[in-house]
Length: 313
Image (cartoon, rainbow, N blue to C red; front, side, top):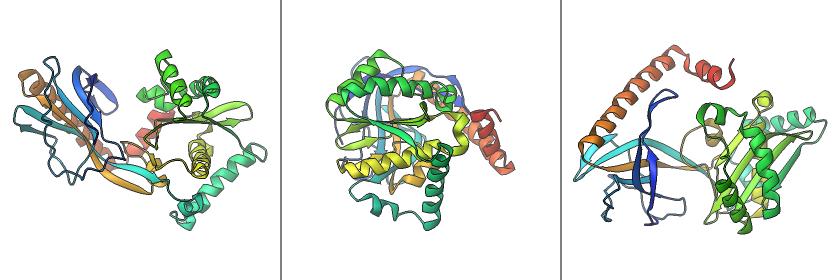
């Protein structure tokens, strides 16, 4: 794992369902384990021995590979070890042909994907309009079109996870394009952008950073259609080691992935009164939220509520 730490403000979110009740910012030393890291999974995360700056409240290791379930909160020496997220990190092995990749799907799933692409092509009048962006001169157009989609996508409206709309992000995209370290994809209906996918590249690994689509085209599975077309293009490029879906679970990631590894986001915070109060509040709200979620699952209401929240139906 890279031992490079980045000092940054990190929100410690206390949420109930999809509502953020409190998100205090803590100054932390942060690093992220990539798919190219070769360290073995750990059974018990150990606090870093690196010196901690006086103004910092601790460390955060994102996507640390773990060998088994971790307690959410425990003491470890001078730190509180807090593990708010444990998840399978899904990814695609890109070191194969697209034909070989397709063979990982069952015949039924391949048929379903083919049917979705064909259905959208028929809706478009026989052929699908989409475009790849990767060169410096192309990224301004990609950003403009992607933002049109992002601002109406449920990813941005509900979760504030749309494509960032800042000059700093734009400059970063241009720099990546100049180094051939970014791929952007736009799916159109006629001349109208309706779905986008943005993937920066780190050490030969494509990062599934932002995906969004126009909810009025939901019935045509346009996010899935664009993902399929983009993967076919990327496999044919034969430049990349993995396609990393990063943290978080979804049926979309699970469907397209070829492998997964179990990971966790691990905080090591100074063991003081302020941080103890913060983390115990987080643990309490998480417990209540999970109990409510379990009850909704038991009653079969959770999928319906999610659909209502996303699409207003």
